[in-house]
Image (cartoon, rainbow, N blue to C red; front, side, top):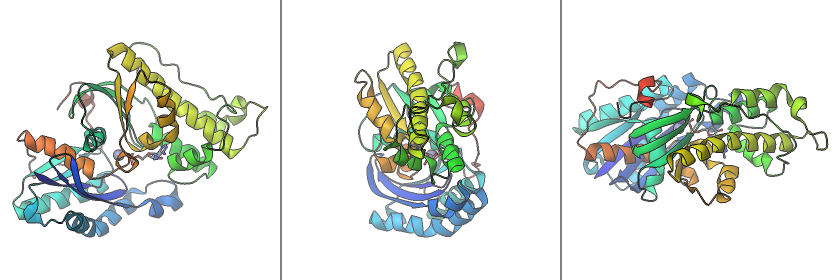
Length: 339
Ligand code: KG4
Ligand code: ZN
């Protein structure tokens, strides 16, 4: 079964053909990074206008690279939540139009489920596992019982992990996207030069939550307070110390979740999963089997959408053409599994 997937939830305009939920026949990702760089962040209005311009050539290229025409496609899928509403609408409407005119089944895919599915395009996985989604918009630690069945243990109570990277990089003019810029600077930095604070969320419902606004604030507004004067106050040292703290905060919750649930496999997804410090540090923890998608599948891409859609289609699920885009995932979705 060949699925055409479309992803336009933020600033990547992507289309992909995936066969049987695992063979990537094409995965075209047209990134708008250079367009948003002068603004140090995604400008929603510009993003949706660029998607409108790019969506047709991107879909055509995805079909061409997969040596397909629409006649070879068995279903069309697009991300319908969460994301920037104007951006989501472009891909979702385009997918509905294609499906309707080609008389193909259509399905809407949840971007968070898609990120955690990405690994399965490259290797088979057993359930349950601890799913760790770390992107520019989301931070979530969950027990994943199936590709669309999560028991959410923790989320961020303020900024997303990637967002903290982006904001710190923006403040210091380190480059855009922030995560990539900070990782690059951190290679030559001393991670002990600044002892940034960890949030102390230890009890009850907060046990697995993370918080990044304190760290962001410390790195931006209270730098001297956490500076070890024996080291230089350089960009490299700020980046390395910030990166170490941000990742250590996340991992403290992942380890806690693995210990409490006795589930020893952690599967990562989202842009921050590309972080080299995160990947390196986990090598020192052989007690946890950590699984990462390849770098191209960490950040937004349509192959993960097509892969997820295959699983839904295989169950006989279809979306109505009246399916609406949604900027957020409804709060109850986090607690009750599939809704
Ligand atoms: O998954 P993604 O492409 O988009 C969202 O769904 O948000 O993630 C983008 C985020 C940005 O915040 C970016 O700074 C971060 O992922 N990111 C990284 C790295 N590469 C991208 N953060 C840390 N280290 C990286 N190597
Ligand atoms: Zn994403």
